[in-house]
Length: 100
Image (cartoon, rainbow, N blue to C red):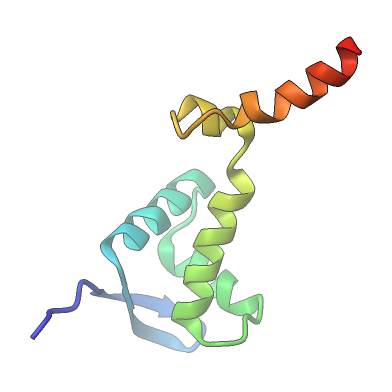
């Protein structure tokens, strides 16, 4: 029988203290967001809940994390992280049109 990778942690949400189960990587990302935004985790979770995501608290937090990092990602960040030649692929057609 496979064991779950999900980690259960307590947070103070809109209706009081509750628990959430997330993958360890998502807990790390949520902690990073809290650090970047200078907020504690409970405050951030309450803000996420207040946004009114359909599907429950844990789903809302997962979607928030994905949207946060998706919005924060840029072509420059993509290239500096070594994730592939995204800048080069987009720059080549523009340079070709300029030279023509």
